[in-house]
Image (tube, rainbow, N blue to C red; front, side, top):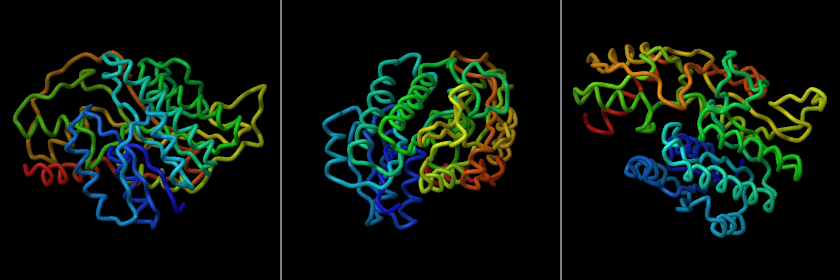
Length: 336
């Protein structure tokens, strides 16, 4: 990769991916609309950390703005597009459904159209573990059908996979989708459990523990995620020569299209995460136990066999180490 477009560059994963690409010697154009779903100051802080790189260019752009996106692809040439921008949040999608269609559907279509007309060599895009929805057979595999989402957010991510396959089939665009599993780490999202818990515990406030703490998540440290994303970005999707239309494999295609899980293959119970966090903070949490919220699933557990075979993906950060690194960043960033 030499010239890379990273959408959502002011976001959590987007920032870290852009930083890694720059450190590898790439020229990176970062797009973000800096919406107010969570603290814009955090997004601006990430961008300030990228600005010292001479090879980084930031452009404030809404992906749903068709004319603006056409201009992005008309004015620059990209070898690779890493599409990480989206309206995030499972629970938020229940209250604000239109925002998800605008950002995650309309925005993604504009990215696909840009890649088509500019003949981009590889489109890597963010899907989500939430697409597994009502599936209970674990570990979750990309070879399972995922036709029963339990939130609109999950439905938009599944739609992204379908859109990508259509464009890959029609126009030969190599498209790789990554189903992220509960990514955490420094510069993380403040609406995620680890961030919320850390802030509340340090403030002496109770934390809301949904699912009575029994939920399990395949927590994946950001450095492991970034390594997987960047490696895969340099390995464009290829058609599966063994793909059989009589018994279609959901994770591949006769087109240059692939879907991968990116997780740790080691789900952790929510109460165990809290226990680790308490040890890192040196404080006990006051917990309010609550039932699961609409749109949540009881567990996530990634089968990463396909990604390991494709790029040698092997996550190596234990959750005890990852949480400690997050706490250290949080204390430093917020001067707590």
